[in-house]
Length: 209
Image (cartoon, rainbow, N blue to C red; front, side, top):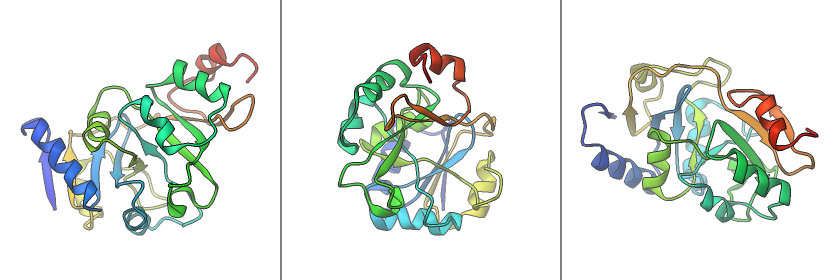
């Protein structure tokens, strides 16, 4: 396993190397605003299944993804409603995950057969830079064994996930709160999980929520 300390490494080269690993179907762990996450090419069915295996996660649970820029959302979704467009414009980038109807290219394993895809566009940070370097959708599930707390220490990530090819280390992450999840396939949108983006902030965009 390769551990790259982003506080000391040549960062552009580190992100290029991580992006190459993702394109090769390998797993890359990276820090988010809360916990470390396990990243894979979200459009690679085998890579997605490797994430499920690493986490011992039930196949009935879909995986969220991150993108480097909200302009890419149309590549991975279908039938974006006016409400969804408003959420994209007003809430992204930020600490919110939006649930859309998935495009036909989204692997069954990623969506768990729901036909929906959960997308987050983070603000500047390691997750954003990784997704930008990869130029595609990267899985964004917490680095934890299913049912156990998320990990904030890159050394613990390396110890618990030996099949991860690379860990991009940014030091200890702060932990909760995690992102808010908002389903924009319904009208008005529905809050699935409350988190870092407050209900009041969402109501300023969608008063009837």
